[in-house]
Image (cartoon, rainbow, N blue to C red; front, side, top):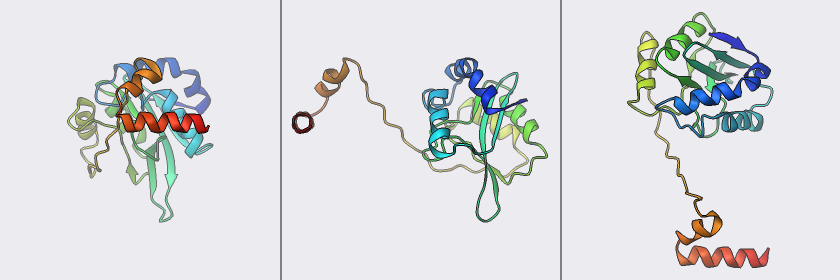
Length: 171
């Protein structure tokens, strides 16, 4: 993998987002540049990163050192963990494993992977010499905005609609 600066990564976001759109087994919205760059700016501006582009995808990690001295590689979405910091196709997990070989890390946190998805299996194979553990599953709720605000509200119960109308009048 070729290491990137934050500026290089930001210049490459069209290509990055194209890879995210084609990447099975990750949340495509939350792994997109719109989400991950906003998360970095909100929760870890200026934090050291490990950004890389390979033949099969991208890696976008923050480097964190915990109070106990543990060195972690985490995604930019450190609060919710919906974004996957590794996106791409067959081979991207092997590229990441090679890229971090010899790096002083204790753990790599890879949130945002769909259990059983091909990318998750690839990560398991690429890091099989390491201790792999599953974290808790998270649920992301999605609301359709089809039909605009009126369409959204038409699919909600009467109590919510009346509360929204009252709040709008007060505002």
